[in-house]
Amino acid sequence: MSMSLAASDIRPATIAPLKRAADDYEVVRRAIAHIRGNWRAQPEIEQVAEAAAVSATELHHLFRRWCGLTPKAFLQALTLNHARDLLRSSASVLDTAYEVGLSGPGRLHDLFVTHEAMSPGEWKVGGSGLTLTYGFHPSPFGTALVMTTPRGWRRCGMS
Image (cartoon, rainbow, N blue to C red):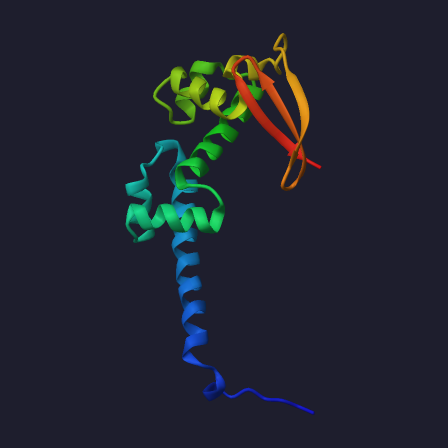
């Protein structure tokens, strides 16, 4: 038995959510492209929202729903990745801070402590001399490895 579907069989109520999803995807795609193309300038959410043609509030909610993080967190992740690469290739903390578009080493320090629970200098030397405490803890997604330093904690992964 063969079945064919005519255009008249598709209900408008079915098409509307698909169109909305496609429109939302396009907004998030434009925002990601803008952030990736301008991360060194550390754009504010208003600038990213303007590039994506939505309000800052709408962008925040759409981005979080589609990506699982905020536009600011995405920008921080890009900045942190580039900073890690520079430090790994022997750049100084000061040079790294300016190269990734931060106002100074204090901002780079805050970024590393927040996301890595160590300073950029400690990260640069591979955590040499840093005391790590770790443990395995249950989570809704499996067993999580949690590590702490004197500066805070870092969730490392799950099994």
